[in-house]
Length: 194
Image 1 (cartoon, rainbow, N blue to C red):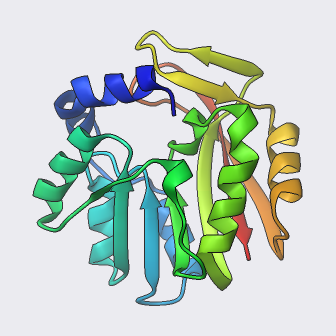
Image 2: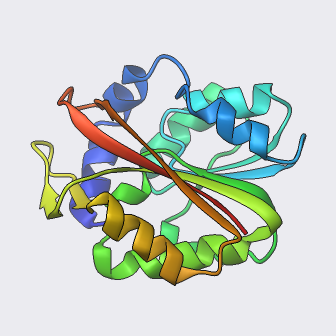
């Protein structure tokens, strides 16, 4: 994640965290695929809304965010520690039953994404599931808030996931939605099983 993107999240943490009121509706389908009560890593916890739902469903959550300010807000919201961790710092091996990355890996530079996907694969137990959502498009660019995005066409994104690690299952889901910027956005979620 670029310094500019992290600066946005640190400088606007309260407003960003306050913008999301309910969990992502796709979260629960991901959780249904995870081992009941299993250990889940969340990459990009934000204000902690999805994290609270994960905990509420009985999972053992390791919540992380690259923004120290968002991690502090989520820590207060959840009443438990949220670690400040950048994606490239993930070094766990066979530690998680599931990894959840809602609209966070979309900030990873194209040249670094395969390495992050390989780290995610390594961090999962056999049979573990990852769910990650991305804004689709073509090219890398910044938005009006100076956040850096890696917009990949769906076929390129799926090809990257296939080549980055030996997944036993790989599927996608696409939808039209929006995000913090309120712009109509084509989204793609990858679900992969180790």
